Length: 241
Picture 1 (cartoon, one colour):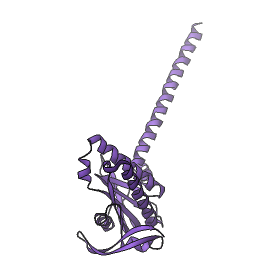
Picture 2 (cartoon, rainbow, N blue to C red; picture 1 turned 135 degrees about the horizontal axis):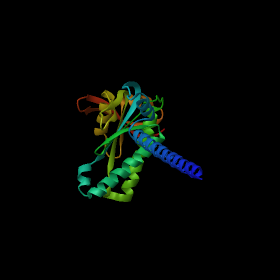
Picture 3 (cartoon, rainbow, N blue to C red; picture 1 turned 90 degrees about the vertical axis):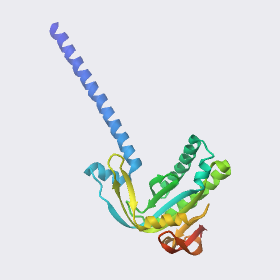
């Protein structure tokens, strides 16, 4: 009898231990999935996989990409008319919309800085339609903001968009709050395109125009002064051809 009781107690202890192990494994799996999802919100899939497998991710040079910059006209003036929560809610709604549009065109969001939105197509995987994809996304973003303006009036923003194509360097910087970022003259020129754009307009550089002129109708603006760049040829995108 005592032997039977002892066996029962032993089996019960084993069962409890195995049950604890199973629960622990479930928690570990859930935490791993959560960590992976957080990583994928910060990094492109390919870069995240490299970081997980090697512990580091190498910086790389990309020859053919297109960079998108957006900015809100009179952001400071409009933001002063909104409560802090209204401002954050509206920025969230706008950038969430941009994220969804960019996702349709294989465009990688890099970051937001205040009211600036930066994204790029053509990395980490090459895409021969990088310029076309970005212009298509820009047209949809412009339409998205026009619709919000009709709906909300002065409680949302007017957008300026700038686009440039060329080469960039991309990589991870930082340790505690690391970020995936891009650098190079192509990025700087894209920023100048945005700064020289107008509300509701998509301003593209000569290099982007050369890649998309057969797909979109564009208005030549002439050579305009760009900060620290001298005079650059610029074009407004009107519509698809």
